[in-house]
Length: 306
Length: 305
Image (cartoon, rainbow over all chains, first blue to last red; front, side, top):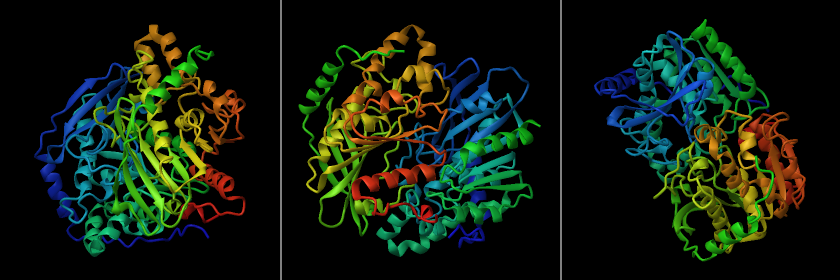
């Protein structure tokens, strides 16, 4: 038995989807970015300078990140927004800067160094206030990631015409939503995308983090309708038709965290005409990273450096 | 680089054990009904370690009559404490007692000390007594002390599972019968760090770039934790998950560890696939604890082969 490549998820994009997110973006734009950027001498080296950065996001939550730039002097740099996995700690992106990019590795609310005002914990984040789209944790979490683009645009060394987004797992899901919402993005890479086809994923997998939703529904079985309704606004599949930049997606066909079926359903929905899927047989949630990292390098070189 | 075991190595670890034994475990248990299922109950456990310092773990106990084998997920070098590692079948909780522990600095054990990642591995490394890892190891051992107080455990089947800390647990605590370990930062640390720019080892490079004069002292401090000097005390049957051939911690590099352990050792070079490596681990532990005819409990997408 193999993975069903024609699998389609049950999520339906809400009719007022754009209105909902438009209001969120309006609210976000009314909040000053209020950037703080401090060089981290300890983490900087001869090739790369590292900064600890902060900015304000939705609900005035202070968001942190690691920002790094290559030391080699150039006029304007291509840039990458690196979006994080679910339970892993956002990395210092020296490797991206060693390849010639300005790179922001963002810590959305609840992640390490961004958790003093909001911290539902792990497990917890995935179902925090999930019964209402206006209170759900990912309303702010998505906005925090998207706002990373505003930070990059505020940097004089960044070429605003050459910004990409990359991530895997939750980062893959965030790469989808960010490239759908922020039209400044010129290229996107989404690996093993999480946050796509939620209601299917909780039946296809028996692993955390998706088990958090099953835990919640076991505790509050009468809230199924509300949960499904909320998640439709946050499902990557609901965002995907709005992506129009070049994008690559990689899936592990034995992914035990983010079921590949939901990855296929996502890919089918992506609106971009320049989209390519990489399927890795014999690979789990790492989604063929060791091979695929070279493909990602070539992809971003072509679209952001070419 | 420090290739010699410190002269007072035994005394150092004896002192830690003695200090730990003088701190009551003082376990406090809370039920976590949302994370309990029809096959396992979950509890949050507060226990005391040296300092004294309060640490926290998730204890899952299968429904039914014990005793049950135990998987002890040792503290990680990361901020988040998971009930079971991401991607592990939740059904594993129907077969094993699982216990995952946050050491000092991790979430749920971050008061008063909240570790940074990167940052934890060099915290207080200015001296042997202030280095945070002394407390981290004490916390790891305290988790085993706590498990031994649980009436439903099968003491003949206690698996320490995780990074380097799993091997330290096996070397320093007699309760461990099996080990599944992926060494990542406590094997010939400074020498290995010089071969990479990736975290977590890059943390040591960062530190030494700013404090080059301290290289000798840091190497000496780390030698107390170096797996090469602990391996002879390990009698548990062990699976060492090595890097792929040519990787930083590949089978060849780890020879000084694996060839000097005193229990049976299986070394598995990574196949650069979390699926293949994960399947190997699950089959290995099932084979060791339940015999070759038993079926490993694996996630849904690993059953398709």
